[in-house]
Image (cartoon, rainbow, N blue to C red; front, side, top):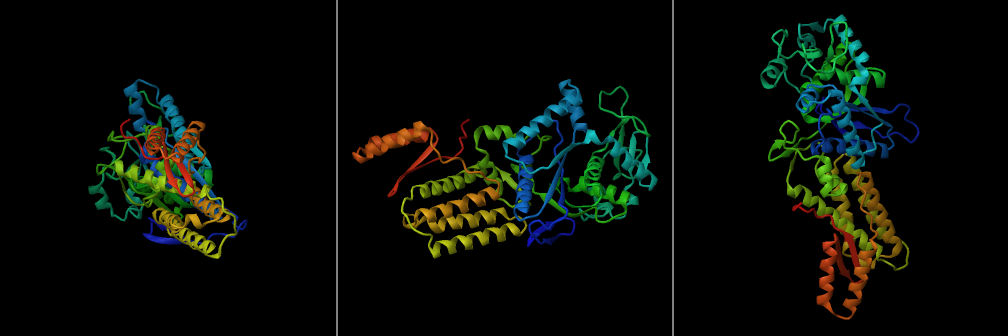
Length: 472
């Protein structure tokens, strides 16, 4: 049984994995994608890697999942950035959309079934606004079309706040003509002489508001305004997700709009949220210039997807050290040459570790505890590695690698470049002559090339080190 924490109810919802081939319709998941006006940063990576892990695990547990992600390519931030750089807003958005896909590929994210641009769904957006007018939820001012929050009785259901608390506690869209400060834009009229994207509409030339983009895309792709899973970063809970619920339920009259809401915790830098607006972000591509993608994945997996993370050097170093431990263990398993069958104790240890791993992942995708179960398995065999035979070593290695792959971590190749193999062989010949000073010199040379060497009774073991270089 897979248990998922639902932000909407504040409770954990149980989902029974289907029998293979018995699930008739896929679970539909919508995750809020990026606003494409700059390079993607680690805050984005935190959210999209989390949902990549969640979707891959659900699929591993035999759930069919259709994963849809939107691309916000119409937004004030895009227009402002285009004005700053004297570029066409559409060209700017297209450029950063391409860089986003490149970054997702670099992270190894392949779980998304479909990406949809807001600009490709203007017709659906206008259709939803028209229906909101007919049902009495929309009204027009000289600046645009707005949603009347007062008319939707459940506004605040997701953030668990009443309207008065929301009015005083949140930054809201300014417009003196709005009926209520909380009312949000469905359609923004083009400003006189402004160089911005716009489309004709029954109410006037303009562009869509932020919240209506997602409900329109969801209805267009999923076929109706009711589905199973919606995800995003926790800072989108209000007003974005709250407003999505209001729009969708006002149009369809069906509740709930989404059965289960999942939210990822924020990524902090010196206790402030990492964001483009604060200019305190590290781009995904800059991080990957210095560290393997496996380090980033393990760094995030060490924290529960709902927990906030404070980014610092320790965040990366601890992940790198964890990976080093895994690679060292796998490298030692490769040295085992003794023949024999898999012992009952070995098999029992592996099965116990696997059950613990799945139990932790089933409990709201508890990746830090799942990693702990994996390291418990490694630790259990580390001290007795010399007593293992080849078949046992292969079974243990396959188990470790499979669990890493379930978590989205692809261990770096254990194969060595020819120059490293030559240095290790030369060092072994020198050690055999008991010339330990020269052997130490060669060890240091190997380490400067990015590889670790450890001498064991079974022979030298070497692996590519994951420790980051902070001098770059």
